[in-house]
Length: 198
Image (cartoon, rainbow, N blue to C red):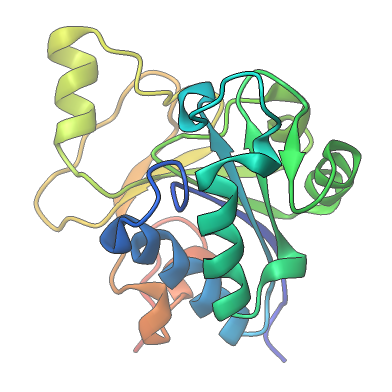
């Protein structure tokens, strides 16, 4: 029997509502890993600017309404939540539940390093930085000195076959062979750099 993991997937679904490509870039991992039998929780931090009324709670934002439509459509409403960056204001599940989920998680798949809340990051033993823009994030960091949030991860992965680099704060970079939603998660479940055997 294949091992089953508790996985927190983090990425942008609702911070910029209505962006189908950005939404699917995250959902393919959430749905694919769940289809493989893993217990998956989608956690998205959203910047304060996502609310047209900055003093309104996150749940009253356009982002929360879009998040609800997406998670309901794909049957993950009870397995997902929004977090207003720099606060404990949440939507979907409360902050204490997010902490509980992260304490029990085996793996964080942190797309573009969006999750920066130390209370949620620290208890997860394997924290993977997934780079969907191979080359750009590394160049922005190295050339322009932009903090691309590489630190705090135990490994970094990208979807390219021709760009490999090692940056401070990351133990190892390697490519993913296939999109997880296509049914191939061996690169994640099998450990650093192992092929999926597909």
